[in-house]
Image (cartoon, rainbow, N blue to C red; front, side, top):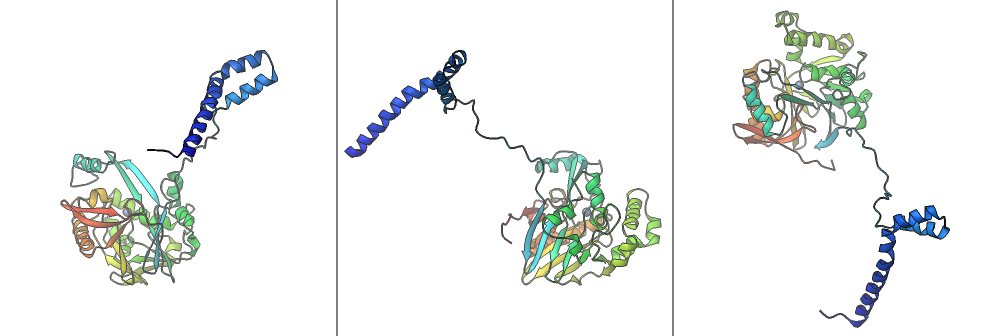
Length: 368
Ligand SMILES: [Zn+2]
């Protein structure tokens, strides 16, 4: 390669300058401590100046010009927005619960097998992480929420780990006072407790509360309550009666399966988890999403293994039959699913996998 003479001359000049600079500054940097020491002993202004200049040379790594930023120590607000046709959906997470798994958490499967499934998805063994993800729906004429999360009292009790739905709605620009409809899928505490604030006032004071007819009849029927087995079922009945106080009851209206609850949102009977457990199809134009409520609990256990019965499935066999029917339909129709207990933002596609199914979470979309 031949260089043009002018360029060669310039490079030669540059090399010479760098050579002389090195000859002066490198020894100066190396001598900085000695110069500083001499300057201390013999306070000559010139030496002090040289010592100060040497101290800030790039060779001296002891000088930092960057200020340290303290760690934030908290998570960002959890909400995610997408559209189905002209309907805007906001997933606002209620947070999670983490607890040690009981031996019979999955009633028909040994804990060792459950732990192996947890290991497959890099989850800690013996520990259950349950996400809660209710949604808000803006249809243009209605501002509704489907399910309410665990409520403000849990926000306080869990130091903000759970019960975040309202704070995340607010972060997403949705005022709880502006919500005109609350749609309930079923009467378990993680879906209804958020109807009340910590002081038992209404979380959504301006909303109608739409509930499934069969679910309401089951939990509010005294006969069923009297027949309930001690332990979890009786506790659930007591909780339902606590939440559905007189102020809530004034606003309750029942809805039927296979009918529109509000325009664009159709109720689908998916019993088993509870007798009146309900899912929803949200549709607008050619677009739709299946809001499965608790057809499965966490997908990494119960979508992968639809035959596993969680202890909170009131009728395990019926819940399994429903699960299989719904997931076959989701696969055939290539319908996205919004799952209350899926990891946030809990929106996924579904495909067949092994002896069950698996969820493929949607890719985060910066536009809606
Ligand atoms: Zn649930």
